[in-house]
Amino acid sequence: MNNKQRWMGGVVLLSGGVLLTALLLKGKEEIHHNQVQASETAVEAAQKNTNNSASQLTVDVETEKRLLEAQRQAREKSVAEQEARAAEFLAMQQQAEADAARKAAEEYAELNARRSAQQSSDNIPPELVEDQAAKQKHLAEDKLAAQKKLDQQKAAQLKADQVKQDAARKAADAEKHAADEKRKAERLAAEKKAAEKQASEKQAAEAKRKAEEKQKAEAKHKEDAKKKAEAEKARDLLEHGDKQWMVQVALAANEANADAVASKLRAKGYRVTKSPTSKGIRIMVGPSKDRESADSARKKINSDASLGMKSAWVIDWVPLDKR
Image (cartoon, rainbow, N blue to C red; front, side, top):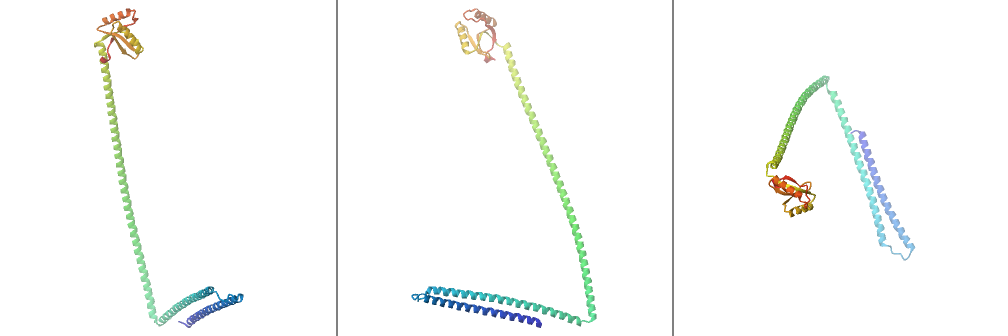
């Protein structure tokens, strides 16, 4: 450490001590001044109370206690503030001393390093200096060759990585293409299966429709055949079956008129039959075994003036239960 640094450190320490002493003295003076001022205030208050009234010779003890307590707290607060300021200044002084010592140590180390380098370079022979220069040159060349080799290795590694990446990309593309082809084949198979299913369902629906049409046609044919058979049976019954010849005497509009006509005929001894039709109620006499018997009955009814039925005629009638 040089003389300048020692002088600066001494100045810092001296100035810090002086400042700390001044702060402590100032704090003591403020405390003494506060105490004196409080005492004077108490004496003045006591004198004032004595002069104002003779009856108030006794000092209020409680008030005095409160005043003294307030003074004590004020003194303690002032002392605490002074101590806090002194501690803060002491910490600042210690930090300044530490910084100065650290800076001095750094400067001293740097100075010794320069001196050592200067002495070592002065004591080295010229041939050793040249050897050292050659050695440094070889070291630089070796370092350059190593760096070049390292660069070549890096370039080769980059090229290998690039080839590897290209191969990986090609493999990924091939895998993607295979996956696309597989999905395409699956889609085509699904479409083909759906088309086959749709065609099968269509064929089944068409076959079902044809079967239903055939069933309906057969049912209609059976119904038509049944109706035709019934018609032929009815016609055969009318043409070749046992016919009952009747004499139709009137066609009444309602049941009452039909009963009136039937009563007249029954009163004459005729056997009367009524048969409802879409146009009214048919009143007939008979049946007769043959047409000649029926025609004889018709002539008799037409000639009977009491019946007043001159428009009777013969019909071949078949009962409903035999139709």
